[in-house]
Amino acid sequence: MRDWKSYLEEGRGILGIELGSTRIKAVIIDEKYTVVASGTHSWENRLEDGVWTYTLEDVHTGLQDAYQDLLKNVQEQTGALIRSYRAIGISAMMHGYLPFDEEGHLLSRFRTWRNTTAHEAAEQLSMLLDHNIPDRWSSAHLYDCVLKGESHVSRIRFMTTLAGYIHYLLTGRKVIGVGDASGIFPVDMQTGDYRDDLLEIFEREITSRGYSIRLREVFPKVLKAGEDAGYLTKDGAAFLDSSGMLESGIRLCPPEGDAATGMIATNSIRCGRGNLSAGTSGFLMAVMEKDIQSLHREIEQINTPDGYPVAMVHANNCTTDISDWVSLFGEFADLTGRTLEPDELYGILYRKALEGEADAGGIFSYNFHAGEFIVGMERGCPMTVRKPDAAFSLSNFMRAQLFGTMAVLRIGVDLLREEGVTIDDVTAHGGLFKTAGVAQTLLAGALNVPVRVMETAGEGGAWGIAILAAYLMRDDTDEELPDYLDGRVFAAAKADCVMPAEKDVEGYNCYMKGYRMALAAERAASDSLLGAV
Image 1 (tube, helix red, strand yellow):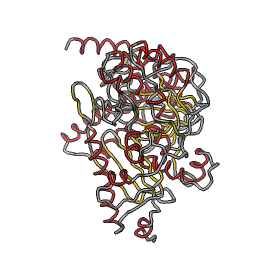
Image 2 (cartoon, helix red, strand yellow):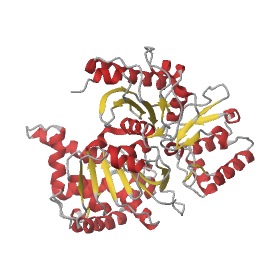
Image 3 (cartoon, one colour):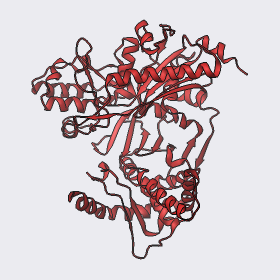
Image 4 (tube, one colour):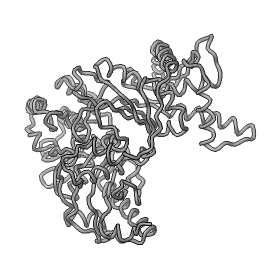
């Protein structure tokens, strides 16, 4: 067995940290990209004066606690006291708003991706630029402050994302990875930098509102994966490790957003590849050879860590409603005297769905606990509808519920295909796929693409940014990132792939025809029931 104590104390490990919405996670990987140890810190955003936020103290103490938890676990498992690493990578939630003045003071509450208060500004900016700017993008929040005449705007000298902010604290450099940058402002895939033509339009608009902001001076500098992003300073080392043991001088890769590290963790950055995450919400990302040519407010365009355009379809609702139904069946099981553990209960009901008719027998599920932008729903009202002659069986009911988790994503994929976007395969991850083979099989039919589930997908974004830090230290600097991932990181990775079956493709097409027709009923229900409250 390897002498992990010596390995880690010699500074041969690579550190990756990701600040997610509910958890901050730190991991150390070795040269074979295996996680050696990890540490975590749980946190929650708070609603203050209508703004979803974390304080900077939350950010600082949470990051430090996660790192100390990592060190504690390392010492318990290996006895090692860590002083250095080969490289470090920082990732965090994309988007949001973190504006600073000349002295580095935060000028406004940190507005996270969860805020929708910039909706009107995002609409206007999208029309102005002829490019989709979602509500949560940093530029949308900036424009919202401009439109509202917020006094702090004139004092902004630097604005960044959460990952960019932490990277700045550690290195003193105001830089950002191209994937994270694409959630600030549109990126040109040819240059790997913010689009000059759109920057010029935006600056003119800001000037016409009475402000003078040079966006290139305010936004962080954009870097691609593998480019130099600075070194850990003495102050940065002391900030991250309160014990004072961590040495300065460690190289850092460009900081990235969670979407980019998710692409890395699922090996989904080559053109034609996609990845799909299915949890409380769901999103699908597909890597493209060129930008989307038409403005679609339903489709978001971001970039891979090496600069290729990515189309993102986001569904606000995914697994919440089906989890409620499973809970209801669990309550019934309790009444019969047989209490089932959650994994067993989900497994029984999900596998039953595979016995259902290909089109779910005339049953349709609308899982809208919240509004759903892609289908024009401002509010949500969960609903199950069936035809009078529907084959109302448990297998068809569960199949319809699973179909409902995928329907909005399918509508988005149809829009992509109208734009000529090709999706060769999809790597799926998230709670929906925990019961092996079920949701994976149905998704392959729903999207008519092969669907893979990888063992490493569960490692998450902290592992993904650690991989990018490892890529920074590669011996062959000419090796492109997709080749690096295919040939080194995932060369021996185990993955289960399901091909779409013709009957499942035809069945889901039939389901979607009815689903689209009955959306009017869903809209009427939500307007009537919620409008009356």
